[in-house]
Length: 234
Ligand code: CA
Image 1 (tube, rainbow, N blue to C red):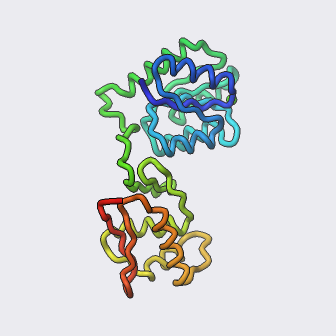
Image 2 (tube, rainbow, N blue to C red):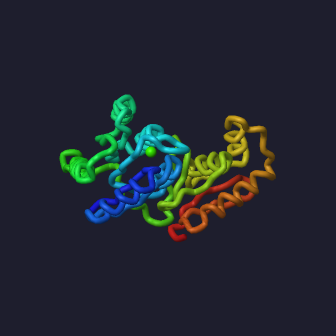
């Protein structure tokens, strides 16, 4: 059994696939458009994805490219329309592992999917890197490329300034970061118009609230700046 994501905007097809794959013993999540798919992929660890290419909001190829940046080895089977040969080639180039052309035979989908999952779990390829063990609740992870931060499996909703502040504190974890250092980093952010030292307090306060429930605490070191410390307990 695998934890799978089905991304398909056609409700009948989506429900049919879900039912079939659940019956085959898999755990299924679904997304109805590309945007929802990306947000699911951000918050859940999947072992495989069935991805329709023609999707509203964010198209399937864009979803595929974005997920490949972060999850290079996650098995992805794409679904394309019969006349979408270019899409199919582009999809494979963008990193799909396999494809099926609509309309397809359900049994064939199941067979292809099983073989794709089997290939991904072959010991020759090592433990599949796309399925890290679920992080302990409260563990902070930062992805500077996206940029995005997670506490456990939950995405932390951060503004650009909060992100820069957190990134700076994490990079200097255990050391005091001066107010001047933070303001200097903010001033180098694109589109930044300048922040006062007083506003900094507000951002630190907000960030502290967003880190509540983690083992991390931002300490005020009077006269010096801020210190990110790991208290070991939430
Ligand atoms: Ca579609």
